[in-house]
Length: 410
Ligand SMILES: [Zn+2]
Image 1 (cartoon, rainbow, N blue to C red):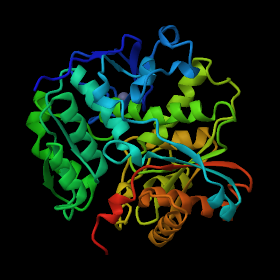
Image 2: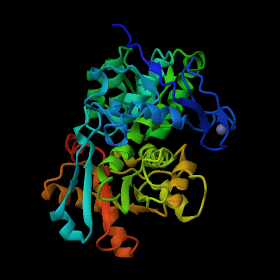
Image 3: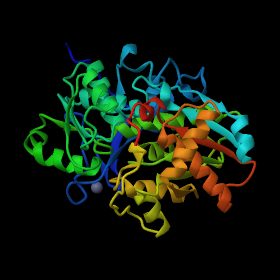
């Protein structure tokens, strides 16, 4: 099968190190990895655009210039062009729904954005659609990544769509035979199992594949190890701004935080829209709230201590697989967004997540444990007064209820 011919967006002006702020040239002649300005292994870099070029390419007939269907309707603000419809026209554009019945229970104006309609069942499709496309446009021949589940599935799905060999996927021990494992295999991935969580799996992967990673034979598409996944997750923020444009952005957005790509991405979208003049400079942007499981809450603990980097924790293990992420390579970026938005971070227990999952179910909302954590987090912040009655609140529901329901009872 031929690899899709994709090309970089000429409106990309440069890359920028998220830690040092140093500008780097946008070199697409080989896959983009971590920065080289910070101590090894480097820090995440982000793509930046020429505002004038983007503005010239926006479709004047539609708000924010979005045209077409799926993720690439935001093409002027994505790093790769030339993407055919079958690649990602079914990704994104997920429903944002006002939920008055559930709102009555908690006393806020409650909205949910449900990501479970994405082709592999979670919001990970957004990031991997763009990450795989950008890698392929830069000559990547095969990807590898450690995963706590959904990201691995999405990486396999988009590798299949772009015409590359299935990725090498590293999952924690105990995930053998899981729905994640089977879905990766379905889309052509090759899965290995090691360690207790994604951090351990990632360490082992980088040790075993050191030679292939160094030679470029294998490209590491882990969370924030390349800039495409961030750009894909950014589309959630573009959609939120587009949807709420007429009625006003939410006061608060609750985001279930593992690696934090979506949280940083949503904020990047708002920032770019302000730069483009598509959001007023004085727009009251939402307070961003990171929700984690108290069994694994590195972002919450570091936020509470006033740190500027996230200090890794030892995870006790959580039912919410996507939140079982004991460190965050973009911790500095996550904490900066929480503070810039005057938001916060909240940890909720696994039993609160379980209860919230059941309550969402009774309200007719199918969403996974990570998503349920946002509802538990909302209740926690209502109790503390950090969220006030009557505020407009958006919960990011990141994946399908079928994923936890497909796991054995524990
Ligand atoms: Zn750097």
